[in-house]
Length: 431
Image (cartoon, rainbow, N blue to C red; front, side):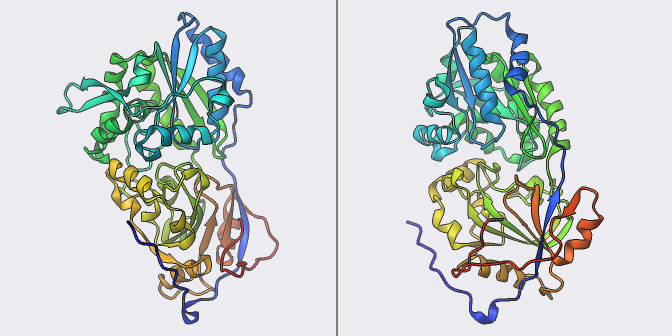
C-alpha cells in the first residue's frame, strides 16, 4: 500500500509575497459547425449504398472528454437507426479505466454515453481477437476488441489532433483509434512497448492491416476549433483513412489553442485530467511531456504548479510528473492503480512521478516562487489557467500587462490589478 502524504504546512518564513493579477482574454479561431445533425446526415449520405438494415454496428468511442463529441455520436447513432441498423457502443480506450470492462464502461457513461441517453446497448469487454502480424514490422501483432470484431460493421469515432507524446504524419485520430483504442489493453501494450518515438511511422501500417482484417463501415473524424467547439466533422471511408487522417491532423494543428504569453516564470494549472488531455495537461500547450521528447514547442516556463484533478479523470493523475509542485488536494484524489496502469502501459512512467507536494495552493505557489532565483512579487511573470483546454480567459501577473496590450489577439479585462485571494485553508477559488 502506498503511504499517505503527511500534510506539512510551509513555515511562515518561507511564504513569499505574490504579485497582483489581471484577467486577460485570448482569441482563437472560432469557426464552428452549428448544425451537427445536418452535417452528419450530409456525410452519412455518402454511404447510403451500403445495406445496413438489421446489421449490427459497433460504434467505438474513446476515453477523452471531447466536448464536441456527444452531439456527433448522437447524430451518427440516429443516422444508423434511420436505415434500420442496430448500433451499440463499445469503449475504444486501450488500457484506460483501470484496464477493466467496468471501468471503461463507467467512463463512457460519465461522458453521457449511457444506454439510457443513447437508446442503444453499451457492451464492454477487454477480450480481443488477434489480427496477426503487420508485414514488415518485426513481428508487431495487432488486436481488435472481440465484441466489435464480431459485429457486422465497426464505426470508430475520434478527434483528430496533435498527440501529447510524439510527432509524426499520423498522431491522435482514426488510425490511432483503430490500433490502440480498439486494441484494448493487449493492443496498447504491444504498440507502446516499442516506444513513442516510432508511433508516427507505425500507425499508418497498423491501421491499413486492421482495415484489411475488419469490417469498418466508416470512421468519424472530429476537428475542434480553439474553443473546443466542432470545427469540422467528416465520415471517412476505409480506403481514405490513412490519407485523410494525415490531412486533418494538419488542419487540427492550425486550430489548437495556445498560451499566447511566450515566457513566464510560473504557470499555475488549476486542474489536470484524462478528460482534458491524454497527458493530463496538453504538452502542445505547455511544451512539457513525460516522454522526454524535444519535439514540443511551447512557452518558456520555469516552474509549473498543478493544483487539482478534474472529476472526469476518475483519480487518474497522469501528467503530474511534468509539474514541479502540486498539492494535497490532488494527491488525496489520486487513484494510484489507474494512474500507474495507464502510464506503465504507455511506456512513460515519468508521467506519474510525484512532484513536491504542498499543503495548500498558497504554499504551492510560494514553493514555485522560491524555485526561481531572484524572483519577487515585483518582477514575477505568472500565468494562471483553468486547464490546458480552457484558454479563452487566463490570469496574468501585473508584469505581463504590457505583453498582453501589445498582442493583437489578447486583451486585458480589468482596469486595475487585483490580489490573489485565498480562503482560510490557503486554497484558491475558481478562475
